[in-house]
Length: 387
Image (spheres, rainbow, N blue to C red):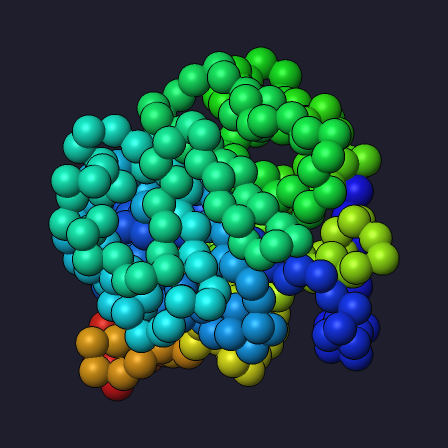
């Protein structure tokens, strides 16, 4: 297993001691859609997946890495809309990769097929800057330096049972170089779940690799007792992903072949789920700083009075925003299925209402249905605004 270093430790390491330093990223999923969200929010999050690429490339420059390994699923589908591959080209064209090659690996979401963005006939391939390489054959080999070599193999379909890591060549006895592998697939197995492109957890040892850069899982994961790792997706794609939003900086000292890895946060957005059980906790969220790049799922599990319900709506409006005013939260999803309104609050309505209206309100307050609750809330607002 690779060893973790702090950023301070890495920066203090004498550059002369480092034989090789690479940046490992994967699972960009450019063009990913978020159909459960509002159209405006979908655009924000889809765009963010492209914007983070510039941060990844900036990290590579800041650390002066020898190569950038992009281990598959860079697009969300084999033939993405033009805006996504042109957007990636724009990000790549800003930089010089003549001394820092970039390797793009087709994964199971964007496999190398005759109609894919990676096919030699596609316009994307023809416009790639010098130094950006597509892994387009099963025996792909590239000498990163005199001391290091990369071996890789692409996915050529969206599902398969071939172990691409075990398909990489075995180290020859006389080969003393640092051997890096890059493949896309799953080393983890879940009960009742069929693994696509399975990768043996001991593939690095069996094939003689010092590090294998993996792509597939959206969370950072080091393979147990093996120099293999997943960086996770650079921008989180759903709630529940553990340690997303990173790239991996991999360093090799001249005295040892054991890779040392450091997580580099690149994602701009943070996803969080909050459950509010009273009005006070909802107010606290409103006062939280730096929510502009947050995707929040807010679960309202509370009982409020009619007047408090109005305060809840006001806070939600401040958090989400309106057509005229930006919200405090970048993307807000609200679950109000557990929000209960106590409509029996006799003090909610003015005491001087006409007798007939008072009787109607009293009858409605005896009915606990959701429709009646909503009607009372509306009636409360109308009477309040009239006064």
